[in-house]
Every structure is written in structure tokens, then in C-alpha cells.
Image (cartoon, rainbow over all chains, first blue to last red; front, side):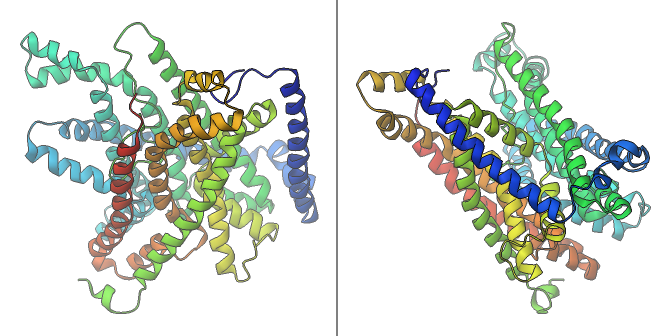
Length: 297
Length: 224
């Protein structure tokens, strides 16, 4: 494999690489051995801490699967609400009228600058004050509200980037055949921008799913994260439970990440369309910047 | 309405100072860890590349909450690793920094790697054709161009890190989000005022970083 850093290795480089491989293996092995020894010392490798996940189906039916269900529910509801809201904000930010563009821009930048946890805690307290939501539904409402406030503004930026990524010729051509501004947006720009945005939107769904875990840890939302407390209370196997929960999160999110990069590759290669694409990391998994730091060239 | 600021009951500035400290230590740590990971991911050794890729894919897809809780419940409470923090408060801070480094390092790694990938292969080939050695190619041709391309993405990672430090509240580190939760429980009538103060605090932390580094990124960017 040749890259900008080095040529395809020849015989001497290959031999050297084998030595590096050996050193690296020893280092990783040492680290792994240290961790396992430490765990064995505290009896964390005992079979009875790990077998419940295979032998006891209740651990899945009462804890893990319902928890995963809540996580997915909160994530999907938040996405479904944030998507149209974000699209609206993103288009409003591209408006020709300063009295629309400037306030919307301020709102978007404000909510992007605030951590989602702060928004969740605030929403939770707000629902307590309003008293309109029953207390067992309050965590879900608070989590979804916090996620919607934050992600609508991130999606607004994705939508804006998607529309701006289209070649200028599209707008010019639409104007040339006499379309109005609204028509240009609705019939020419948005349909093409949606495909360009797809990878970024799927990546954002991963961010949302990861952020739901905050609700489980802080607001008492009964999601997959919070099941860690319940399971380890029953089976006293903190580390094993953490590992299993992590594996579930990783499996779900990895599938979505793979989908996003597959979409991105497909869009780049497709002969149809403009080839414009908003990369998954425009919102850079959690990394929306307050001032909207531009992407590197 | 803003009595809670003057009553002396809450140390808002102190909480934000902890947030800043978390950000600084984690930023330094994740820069180092990110450089190491990026080095592995672009190295000619297949095993290192595989390890780097596997680490990044695993950790990026894990919720930060889970990592930090894992550091606290798993490493500290179960295995008794306190990272040299004698009191549980100190250990909590250090474990939160560890979790943040493990997580943010992957984003630093990806930013650096994409920076290296923006350098056209022809640049390095031309340099080799001139007879420059591996380290000369790296020092004179590839890295200067790569660094200029990563300022923007790294600034985004720093801003995200600043916001992500709030997750340390889940293990009881006394930073801004935890204080806000406590204040909202006691001062329910000043809900919007409390929210406004903390929102302003984070806007003040993230906005200047973004503006400044965004300006730098634009200035140093390589025009291609």
C-alpha cells in the first residue's frame, strides 16, 4: 500500500515492519495482561459474573431489550421532531431578508454553543415547574426536548451546508427559466440537497443516540445506560454489565456509521446528480462549533 | 431575580473554573493520544493500522457517558484504580479527564488523518524524486501542509470537548452542569435566570474559541 507518507514497502522495509509488529504486539499484550490480572485480582473474571448474559434470559427481557427500546424511542422521536424544525431554521438562515436571517442565525448559534446536558437539565426543571407532564413521562420529555433544541440547530447547519454545496449553476438555471425564489428552493435546491445531506443526517442520528445516555445517567430516564445500575444491583457484576451495554451501543451505532459512509461513497461516485455531498463530519459528531468554524479545504 | 448570584451560596465561577480545567487537561491529553492514534492509523505496519482503526471505530460509537461512568464505576469503585487522586473528589476529576481523553482522542486522530489525506500524493512523490529522505519529506512537505488543514477541524473538536466536559457531572465532578442541576432544584422560581447564566457561561467559553480559531483556520488554509 502506497500513501503520501511512504512508498510500497520493499524487502528491507517489510523486515523492519515485522520488527515493529513484534514490539507493538508485546506492548499491547502487556497492557492487556495488566488489565486482566487486575480484573482477576478483584474477581471480575469469575464465570458467575458473565454467564447470566447467556444463561439468564430475564436479564435481556426485563432490562437490556426494554432499555434499548427506550433509547431508540427517544432518539427517533428527537430526530423526527428536529428534522423539520432544523430544515426550517436552515432555510430561514439562507433568507434574503436580514430580519429573518439574523435572528434565526442567533438562535441557531446559541443552541449549538450550549451543551446538550444543560438543555436536558433545564427542560426537566421546566416540566417540573409547568407540572403538565406526569412524573413517569417527564424524563423522556426532558431528554427529547433537550435533544431537539440542540439537534435542530445542528441540522439547520447541515441543511444550510447541503444547499450551499450545490453548484451555483442550479440557482442560475432556475432563475433563467423564470422561477421565483420559493420555487427555486422547493423544486430545485431542496430535492438535491436532501440526497447530499443524507450521510450527515445519519451520522447525526448516531450523535443523538449517544446523547440519550445522558438522560439515563442524570435524569433517571429508563434507557439502556440506566440498566447498568439495575443489573449490577441484581448480579453485582458492574464491569461485565458495562461491557455488554457498551457492545450493544457500539453494534447499533457502528451499523449506522457504516450506513452513513456507504451513502457518502455512493453519492460521490454516482453519475447522476451534482456529486455534491455534505460529509458525515460537518457536524463532526458532537463537534458543532459555536461560531461555525469552517471546514478545512 | 438574580439573587442566587450574590447570595454567596453558589460558587458559579468556581464551577466554570472546574469546567475550564477539565477542558485544558483533556485537550492536552487528547492531543497527545490523538497524535499517537493518527500515527498508528497512517503507519506502514498493518497491525498498528488495524489497532488504530478498531480503537477509533469502537470508542467513537460508545456514548461518552458510558465511558466516564465506566471509568468511575469500573476502574475506580471495582478495580480500585484512582490515578493517584487521594480523595474521591480528586480521583473523580482525574477519571473524568481519562474518559474525556479516551473519547476525544479519536476525534483528534480523525482530524489529523483527514489533514494528512488532503496533501496530494504528487507532493510527496515530487519530494522523493528530488531525493529528500523520509523525515525530510515529512518535515518539509507533508506535515506543514497537513497542519494548516487541520486547524479548523481541531478547533471544532476543542469546542465539542468544552461542551462534553459537562458529562463529568454524571460522576459527581463539581463542574458547571452539576451546579446548575443543584441550583435548579433549590431555586425553581429563578429557572430562566439560572439557565441564562449557565448558557451565557458556555457561550462565552465556546464563541471566542470558535471565532479566533475559525479566523486562523481561514488564514492558514492551503488554497488548492
